[in-house]
Amino acid sequence: MSTPNESASGFDSFDLHPALRDAVRKAGFDTPTPIQQASISAVMDGRDVLGLAQTGTGKTAAFALPLLHELWTDSDRGIRALIVAPTRELVMQINDEIRMLAQFTKLKSITIFGGVSQHGQVKAIRRNPDIIVACPGRLLDLVNQGVLDLGQVKILVLDEADHMFDMGFLPDIRKIIKELPRERQNLLFSATMPPDIRKLANEILKDPEVYEVDFKGPAKTVSHALYHVQKGRKQDLLEHLLEEQGSGSTIVFTRMKHQARKVAEKLHKNGYSAVALQGNMSQAKRDRAMNGFRRGKFDILVATDIAARGIDVSQVTHVINFDIPANGEAYTHRIGRTGRAERDGNALTFVTSEDRGALRNIERTVGSPIEVLQVEGISDKPGQHDRRGGGGGGG
Image (cartoon, rainbow, N blue to C red; front, side, top):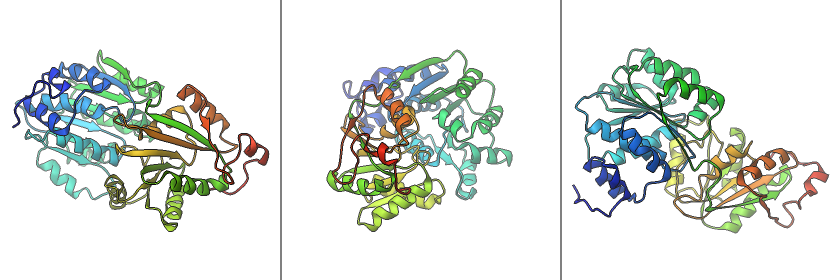
């Protein structure tokens, strides 16, 4: 175990167990992010917490560190913490961070999600882990089969609750909650607070501490630009911009999963190191895509919004909205994958004649008009695409 260094980390002020402080130092964490500063002490005090924070603000460590502290200083054993998240990628990302932070303890965590055989997950449950990180559907399946007993859970974490609602998981969440002890600590994190999530928070949280952090708009390290373009020229514009920006790690967002596949296939055919990530891929292919992108095997990841939940790659230099997001909140979520850790990032958005309403919403979120750029011979001048009526087939 390393020798404590009083100036090594701002996390020392939280009175975490020394094993966790050592892990924080080894991970290179220095100054707590706002959501960590706001919520770690409250969670350690046993309070329920409602945290409103965007992707990439450090909320995993905000709940993982105090959760691990509680479990490691507790004499009980068994499944005492349950973390529920909407997608497999996010579940795996959360579990990876928990394992990193718990490396100097003997606490064990496992993942549960669909799309793979349940055999390995059942074996992992029988080894009596301390923490389960799970997607709602498979978790509820195993509970209903009698394989999993949640009667010892002391801490429940619902992460990205708004996206669990978007994906239709709210009924499953309510069923899972009924399987838990009535006396427990509840932590709910969400980027937005639609009425159904507010209602759920009111139902399960007892006198919560409420923190709204980094919630108003995109990071200041991100520059924004848009290109007016006809639908049929989007692929041409995309390849021109990729060629122009050179080396870098880029996420391209499409609206539909079949389009993500189509765009990635065209890029690959034209010599770009690109891969698709979309919802109906097998788990092995999803893992290959994400791991390849994280490790730099692929420079370009083409993804839909739902498939991209949980993407956490700090070196992303560009986010390109091949299809404009539906609203300002979705825009903020997408571009939250660039400009991280004080690095500069770029958000580029393709706008057709049909996108004016969404663009106004996005500009209200950003707080100012977005700069319009042009590529001679490919993109349109502002207003030009309106006169042409958008033309072209689906890119």
